[in-house]
Length: 127
Image (cartoon, rainbow, N blue to C red; front, top):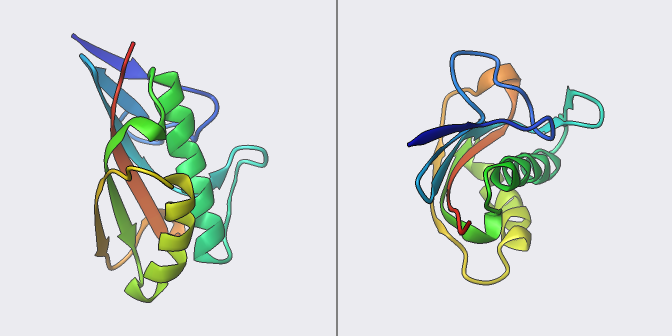
């Protein structure tokens, strides 16, 4: 059985996709940008601010789907400049102080709305 996950605590899907999809005890979270839900604006500026907001948005969707980033199995990170890796990684590490999930990080030519970072996630649900 497949369940669509949606929360007002993260950016709404702006195309033919869902914020997340839960299948059994797995939650697949679509790529998230650094939209600050308190303002509705993208957290432009430095990659640290964007990374923190992206991870907060992933967490909101994970919670709506019956999980959390503490139960993340894999995170994919997309950067427009691999020179931003260390800055993104410092923020990322603060979200996963113990037992971090598997991860891939790649440099891409461009991301939607001119952001510097996007991330998606697969989480284990325990309910």
